Structures are given as C-alpha cells and as structure tokens.
Image 1 (cartoon, helix red, strand yellow):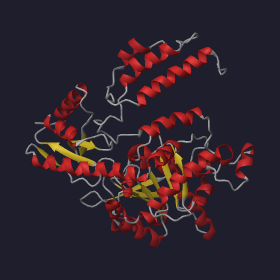
Image 2 (cartoon, rainbow, N blue to C red):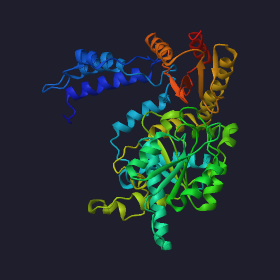
Image 3 (cartoon, rainbow, N blue to C red):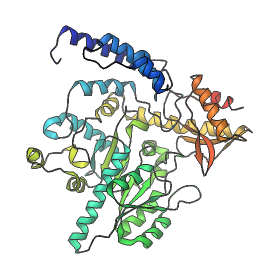
Image 4 (tube, rainbow, N blue to C red):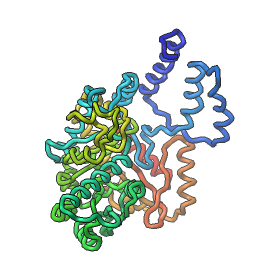
Length: 452
C-alpha cells in the first residue's frame, strides 16, 4: 500500500486533480445537507475488502458526499462564524499533510515550529504583548481556552504553595454572562465553578462588575475571562477596565478573542481592544477571521514558562525532549500529538503580506456597517444592536420563529445564501456574520429584498 506502484500513482493523481480543481473554484458551490436515509441509499458500502479504486472513491466524494456538506467559504455563508480561507492557505494545507511533519517538538519539526513561531510573534506584537510572549497553535478555541485556564490554575496553585496558602475548596473562573460556551465546557473538564458577572446594558463586561464579583468570591477566583468579540453580536468587553482590576488583585486575565481579536489588525479598531496588552493569555482563531483553513487556534501566553510547567508531559520515552531547553509546542497546551496547523497561515501571510490581511478584515467591518444602515432604512426591518465588528443582528417585524425558519430554508434551497435564525433574550432574530472578502453589499441587499 505504501510503495509507489502504478495504483498508488493513480490514487495520488486523482486526489491532486480534485484538490486542484476545488481550490481554483471561481463559483464556490453552497450545497446543502441531506438526510441520513438519502446518504444511506447513495453512499453506503464504500468500505470493503477490495476497495472501490481511486477513480470511483473520488467520484463518490465529489458527486455525493461533498454536495451534502455546506461550503463555509461561500460568500453567502453568513451563519455562525464562517470560514474563508485564502487560496494560498488551502493549497499549502495539502503541503503540510504531504510533508509528514510532526509539529509537537523542535527536534522533529524545527523548521515548521520556527515558521509557526514567526506568525505567533507577529500576532503577539499586534496585540501589544511583550517580546518574551509565545505560544502554540492548537485545534480550536475550545482547546485554546481550556489550555490557558489549566495554565492559570496551575500558576495559582504554585503561588499558593510558595506563600503557604491553602487552595480553595472549589476553584472559580469568572467571566461574563455573554461569554462563549467553551468557558463552561472547560470548567466542566477541569471540575471547577463558573461565576458569570453581569454585563452592562450593551452586553459588555466592565471592570466594576468584575471587582464586585471578585469581592464576593475572593481567592477562589484564579482567572477572569474577557471576550474580544462575542459570537452572537461581536461585542468586545471593556478590557482596559477589567485589566486594571485583575492587575491590582493579581488575578490571571485571559482574553477569548477567538472571533473578534483579529480586528486589532485594523488600526481604527485598536482602541476598542485597549487593555489586551495586559493579558496573561489570549486566543484568536485563524480559521475564522484570519483566512486559514479549519482547524487552528493561536494561543499566546505572556509568560510561556508558566504554560510549560502546567502542560509538559513526563514519560521515559519523552526524556530526550523534556530534558532540553528546546521550544516544544506540545509543552504549551493540552495536546501532545499535534499537526503543524499554523503552517497554512504562515504560508499565506508570507505569500501575500500582512497588509492584505488588514484590508480583508477591514472589508468585513465596513460591510457590516453599510448593511446595518441599509437595514435601518427598511421599515419592516430593525437592528437589534448596532454592529461593533462584522456581526449584524436584526429582526423582521411581525415574524415568528417559524417564519424565520421557513425563510431560511427557502434561501438555502435556492442556493442563494445560508442564514439561520438566532435568538436574543428569547426573541427570534436574524444574523449576518460577515467574514469572507468575497461577500458583497449587492449580495447582502438582495438577501434583505427577500424579507419584504
């Protein structure tokens, strides 16, 4: 199977031909999901003793399986938080797989780790973190948040031991009631409690609310999580005032910027994120607004040594790695085995330059503001909140949840766009999450036209 036979050559050529065609698509298909029953009829039986052969297997994927998957890079994919990887990043993702690189240690993947670190150091500078900051690319925001909080708790425990202080009966992480669900997920894995501080009327967590919660829960709180762009609305917490409180009380500050922190690359947006430079750890997901393919999260620490203390795994067969001072990415997060998932972003940045990234992010912010103004001009539509980043939440007056769903289903069936209903305070609403540089004001206004 591994030898370069004629059959293997045919398999590789078939895969590369399909990949080349897919990367070069000008008109990206939106496609749509189908039922398990439909796929059972058309796709069952692909795994068997003899195999289908490369041509038939690729045909099954291209004509049956792929069309049953939504293309998140379609300009009309406006639900959840889309992905819009650059063509360069998509193409280089294939190179990463073809290179058979293990990205967990310096000794095995020094070149790949160096390239990933180039990107991480650039991001750290953009976020105002010190030159000593560093980190790792992990699978996604959930793993990034979990890894950062594990590090924060470990640092709190070590500090307690050094000071002769007993650990609390239950550790607590403090966040906003608007925080991403991955914080609660991380807390469940870590067997700790979550305290949700009340945001202001605009959905933004502020330092005074954090101070009150810290007064109530005291030394049990080992970390505060501020959000740099909520998923549902794109709201950025008042990080500067939160950082002032955490610094004065010696509490770890983590910034969950999975979606929105990339907006710091746009100069006019930097004041919105004031205070990020004081964070002990931050995450941002390049597979969201930094145009990388799934799945990749950049996790950065102000002091990477604290992460090494928390995450380095010890085993006899790992001695050759752990007994050196090498920069081993697997020492900085919860995953030991890791793909060099930061390389597609590195290649795209190296190929295109950072200014194109700034421009592409600015496009989403500008487009959100433009379509929000258009919504405000239509009497049957209204904004739920003014957009801050590139998420626009609005309502169609007089519609029920059933009306929204029927409209959404029709929009997808017509292959125009993928816009699913959301909700706010119990009210069904609609939501545009704008990421792709290919999304246009003409497309968005044509979607609004269908709501008349």
